[in-house]
Image (cartoon, rainbow, N blue to C red; front, side):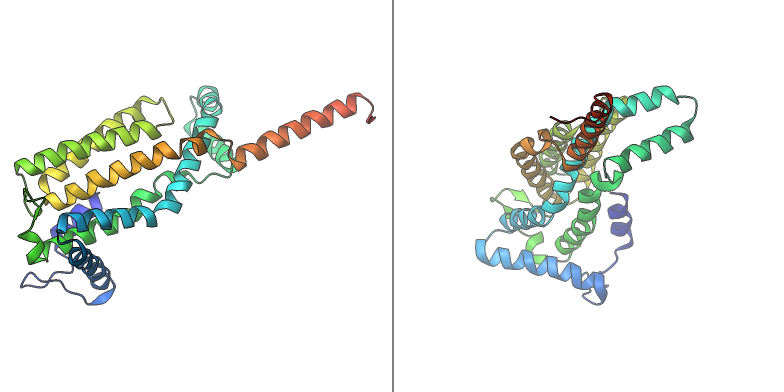
Length: 259
């Protein structure tokens, strides 16, 4: 999020006349997003719908990363009791807590960054969309459904989208929360408020992107609930190892006899 703000301030990729600079890697990438918006507009006749279609395309592309995030959430939920024991056992030694926590992550074949991948991957897309909006004169004059000015900032439309983006992000965070840590609960409140604030400050088109994106994520989270509740491969392996060790001890006690 901070990267988006920083790039917005620099005006990177925009020519002095306000048009898009398509030179270089970043200019090419923004140009691709801008062309996608224009193409969807040709098909639908509405830039608001074009933004919704771009959002849907982004969510489809992000699906593999989202599946990794779901796996991460499942494992985190499973190992919460073990993490709590580590924190209590080494409460006076933060370094030891970090070491033991990393051991748990390695044991369950989990990458701690997996939960952040979808957010990180979407940041360049979000800024590219921001720049594509700011350099598209036709889009700036367009109204979604005839009443939402897509280029408007700090308007009543922005306020509605800001509130909706904050609410939908909070619901999505609530559905995926795996820890009762007070700090995590606080972040799940602060982050939606931040997104709501940015939706109020940025063009309404970005607010539309956020709202529809979070709605899609909520739907996706709901329908993948079974995957989160099912046993993960890493957890299954760990359980099998424990069962194997337990069975091995039982065989040893019985003198290694088999029926």
